[in-house]
Image (tube, rainbow, N blue to C red; front, side, top):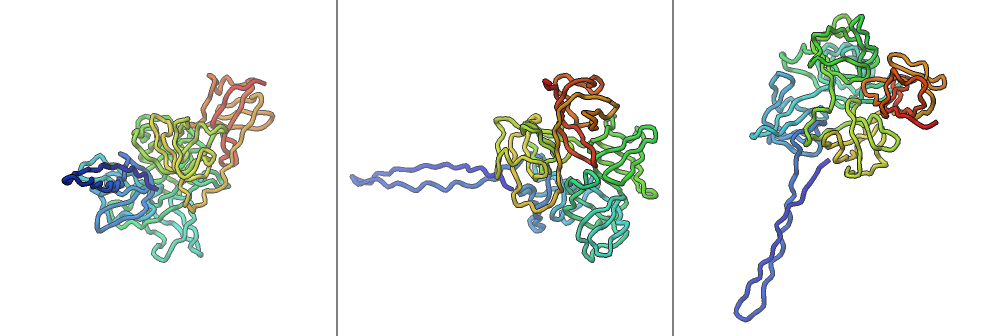
Length: 378
């Protein structure tokens, strides 16, 4: 998807010749200029290795440097459908940071080669003969609604050839089943992560529902964390373009969640491309440019062919009762809160009992998880 700006200097010159008429020149054709954001997150559309350029979110960047964490790589390591972040702050060209969802060793491949396992997660992807068990790979994906909760729609699987990268385990996902007593939590449907507080970056407080990036080691089918980072879009620059899946939209479409890790406001100034506000629904692939948490532009990827699952949302009204540390009930139905639950009208979970409320949310792992709770007149 491209954002193009037409810039033109159109003029005409009248010249006199003796007593004759004037000659009017033709207007110049407006050049097409690709206005690139300062930073972009998305998948690689294509790579031109000879010219050292990469296309991300429809923009073409001259590549100055490629990196994965602290490891310097080359443009030859970039592949189509890899998830990356591109920064244009370098005067000599763009810095491309590879941002995989998982890095690890393939522990098994199904007989039909339609599924494989990395870091304890079973993933669906057509694995060609290039891949074998015990290969180190980078997996790029988008969030996907599954019967087991929030899963992974695999976009690409790339074999790792560099010795300094192979051996570095990494996994991203939605944190659930947090237990501070055993110092464990789950990512996805099946991966158990062990941690100690000292490995959590920026002294962040872990909460169910957060999207986290975890680095460490797989030991006996368990992931032992050496570094945990809570992933959000709160610190994104104003000129930051983000590609992702809409994972929740409130009923009046004034707010939405992207990639299960950040929320944006939609207002009268929000521009829509290749679609309109009515198309803003869970499961859509979009590119979002935001300023201070407000979506300045939302562009729909209309040629996206990936299946992101059946995203199920809900809305309920009633008196809250049986309030617990992470849940409450309405008319015998249980609703859960997590890191992204927003309380309106000065409401708090601990004071919710007996209040008539309106609850909007999304169903994850069979649980109704509240995204927005506000006071209603009964």
